[in-house]
Length: 193
Image (cartoon, rainbow, N blue to C red; front, side):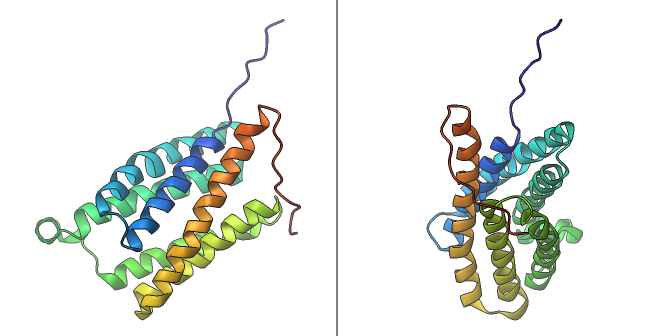
């Protein structure tokens, strides 16, 4: 009889990429780092690696992970491409379809707020840490919506602080999975629903 091959959990890469990219973007939003690292990490780790992790979640039958990691991987890729092409005046002029203003960015973020709300409801059936991760993500997107659509700058600063917590929660969940292989059990709390 053939020995069963143990597969890695793609969620560790998805959570790592999501956490790192979210964290570096908030450092940028707070004026602590330039946009360059955000774009590189966003395209390669938050975007591409997370997208691959989502596609690997499909093979495990985890629809939640499949949707979340693939979705947010695509979010990071599209946001980075917007930052590269949509905000550069010369490129935007040459490829006018790629440019959008603050209102367009606000609508873009609003769509991701709706997407996140759907996943937040499902996250409450898993455990407390996942529910808190999606709650902070939902609050962060809402703050960014208010900043871009209503011009409330304070909401953007509060969103950045909230999303730092969100990023650290993602890394905590990554650690939960990695440490479990070593016999270290970190608490995640009970489901909310």
